Every structure is written in C-alpha cells, then in structure tokens.
Image (cartoon, rainbow, N blue to C red; front, side, top):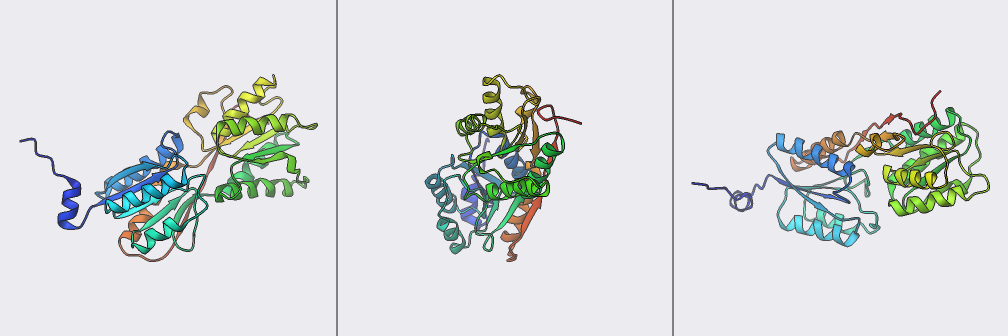
Length: 291
C-alpha cells in the first residue's frame, strides 16, 4: 500500500526515538564527511538513525542546531566545536536537560563530557621530527586560532620537536590565524617574506597546506627541493595534488565509530567521563624530502 512509518511519530508514541544528532563545523570537508560515515555506520549497526547538521564554523548556528536537535528529542548528540565558539554554556544546557553529549576532534569541558581526539601533540612532534631528520633546518608552523584545543596540542608537539633537536624557538615561524584557505595564503606569504624563510612547513590541516603550496609555487620555489611541506587530516586531494602531499592521517572513520560508542555508553546510563585517543599516522608522499 506504500505505507511508510514516521520515525518521529513512533518516537512520540513509544518515547524511544532511536535517533541521535550530529553537529559538524563543515559538511563539505572530507574529514568531517568521513567522521560522519564512521558515526552512521556504527549507529546503523545498533539500530539508530542519524540527523546531521552543520554549524558552518558559526557559534550561533551551532547553538541553534543543538537546540533544534534537543527539540526533536534525539537520544544524544555528537559534536565538534566551531572555530568561533568560546562560550560553552549551550553545551552545559544540554547536560541540564539530561541529553547525552560527546565531543570529537575540537573539544571543551573535558571534565563534563566524554570526547574522541587524535594524538595531536604526539603526531605533530613526529611530523616535525620527520622534517628535521630529513634535512630541514627552519621549520614553520601554520595553525588556527590559539584558543582551540587542537591548535594547542599540535603546536605543543611542534615545539617539543624543536626542543628535542636543541633548536631555538623563533616566534616569526609560528603563525596561528584561521583554519581557512585565505589565512593559509597570508601566513605563507608572511613566512616567505622573512629575511631567513623556512625550508619546511607543518600546516595544521590540509586546507592550509594546499594554500601554502599555491603561494610557494607563486614564488617559483620548488616542493620539496626548496621547502618541504606536511599537512594534516589527509584529505583525498592529498593524493591528487602535485607533488602528492605528505600528511598526518587522523583515521576519521575510526574517530566517528569511537564517538558513537562513547555516546551509546552515555545513553545506556554510564556516568564515567572518558577521553578516547585515536592515533594518527604519517603518510609520507612527495612533498617532503626523503633519505
């Protein structure tokens, strides 16, 4: 007869929606799409339906999405902070409403909420060490806003690598603005304008790395002969740009699965706050010197 049950009507009838909500900063980015796939695959196996929303890196939209999902009576929410978010009261509001909430990648309030992160400090230290161990003398770091926890962790790893190699920290080589293409272009222009420019760059994500590539070419410099380059998140495009981009792979589908498993624990009544760390992998390609 063509009848289709309405999942929201069923949720009202039985008070068991079997639905969760997800808020990502940017649905277009491969990293977040891969996270969503991991979440959805794990949720489907447990009989849950996923409602996806995007904050578009906007704090007010993030807040609105959370309120809308709460109004739809989802059983729980998985979220990642927008770049703009510095006030966390809307997450505490979800806790007050007894709506389980789990963070991934960009996190906050770690004593109140479980989270899934990558080993940003360890992976950034390894990536920086790789550059230094393969001929680079002056390695720069291009990052996002300093209040973001992922920026703090990756910058810390970068600085630890410099310390372990007994290299003095040069503040002119560390530029942290926005996680956007134009910001990456501006940062790279600033680095190449130095009297003693870097011969290696660690970029906080692949978008910043791609922007660095464009500016380096614009200056008629060669990658990796003149400047070695490492990105983060290992977007699909890393294999298709020239030269192929060496990148830190965050294993996003594994992160997505882990985030759902943490949320399911909360839905089932487990109170313990946990932080799961998914190890990142360095994918060495053609944008770095080998030897």
